Image 1 (cartoon, rainbow, N blue to C red):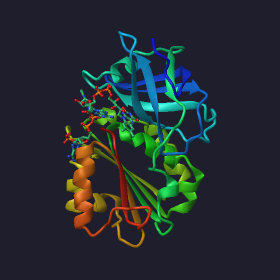
Image 2: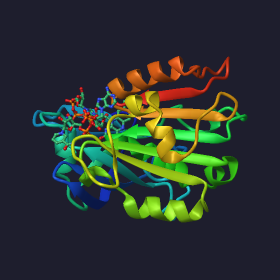
Image 3: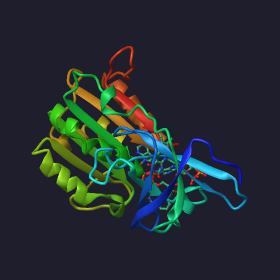
Length: 256
Ligand SMILES: Cc1cc2nc3c(=O)[nH]c(=O)nc-3n(C[C@H](O)[C@H](O)[C@H](O)COP(=O)(O)OP(=O)(O)OC[C@H]3O[C@@H](n4cnc5c(N)ncnc54)[C@H](O)[C@@H]3O)c2cc1C
Ligand SMILES: NC(=O)c1ccc[n+]([C@@H]2O[C@H](COP(=O)([O-])OP(=O)(O)OC[C@H]3O[C@@H](n4cnc5c(N)ncnc54)[C@H](OP(=O)(O)O)[C@@H]3O)[C@@H](O)[C@H]2O)c1
């Protein structure tokens, strides 16, 4: 098998199954520093000894109690995917390889100083990097309001409920969590899709806050179709894409 440059050996130290095809793993490995919101790569060999490697976002903050070398990832087993089904078959103690240089610009440092209301819009597994950011004291102290929106197909995929409940207590009223389920109807859960709910105002009504261009910043993460459609709605509403050279109101990370 060829040597895998830029990856460190790691061990699976925790595994949690959320649904038939969604799970979290915690991996212990010595890699370079990272900040909340970033991602690294995970790698395993295939049947022919070739390396499969893909990007996965940290769910934990690097400052969590287990130490930054213990890293949690939320993963969906994509049908017919190359790597994710193999990750789903890992057991405690199994070996896995972790990219030594985490990266990504969806971080607190990239948000303009003027933003006091932070909107975190995610689909599926992309809630992960937002949970990482929410665990940071800076997020708690810096913003007046943080709105965490998680859109999934079924209620079962509304993962990390206990952690979100703890965050709500820590944030003493400043954190609003809005779960959205698209393929089932539930009495107390909003249904639909993020861009439609932004366009018709349903989302603002549900969280009792209307974004404005003075105080609001949006991060969009997950399904590229959601990111694309949401970006279009935000532009229609008068918000601008954030660039380092020219501060705007939204930025995004596509998962594929
Ligand atoms: C910056 C970044 C961060 C990422 N973080 C995560 C993460 O934290 N958790 C995670 O599960 N995936 C994440 N991904 C996606 C991940 O890198 C892989 O693409 C995914 O695990 C599928 O790999 P695969 O080899 O099994 O499938 P492939 O054979 O590569 O098939 C890819 C196809 O799977 C689908 N797909 C890929 N990722 C997802 C997903 N997350 N949810 C739904 N459908 C998907 C798409 O249809 C895509 O075309 C991230 C991707 C990027 C670019
Ligand atoms: N989630 C499951 O139960 C399940 C089961 C078996 C296999 N899989 C596979 O797992 C992979 C990912 O599934 P996933 O459910 O995590 O991710 P997903 O397909 O990205 O769905 C997550 C959420 O994003 C929404 N969405 C999709 N396109 C959108 C758009 N253009 N604008 C706004 N919102 C949009 C979905 O709404 P809609 O429901 O309206 O599309 C859903 O609420 C896929 O390959 C899928 O085939 C998933």
